[in-house]
Image (cartoon, rainbow, N blue to C red; front, side, top):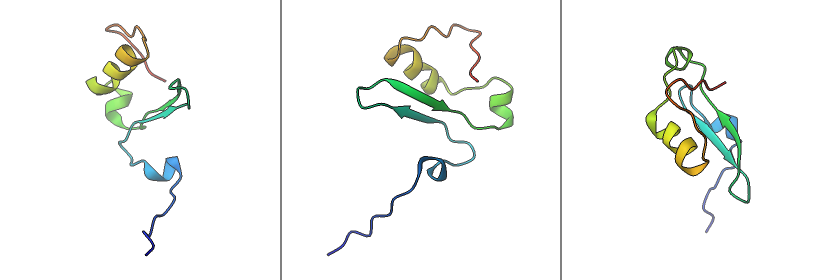
Length: 68
């Protein structure tokens, strides 16, 4: 019996408001994709994304971090 799996590329899998992380085979952060919406343009990034970047990847983002 086939499972009907379909391969989808990274960008096609992301919705208009989705954030995406590219993580290498050794766990290193290779890329961070942020949506181009009004909330992000005004500096809003979900707390969970900031927590991952700070706690897992050791980034010191502080209160005034800007993500490009």
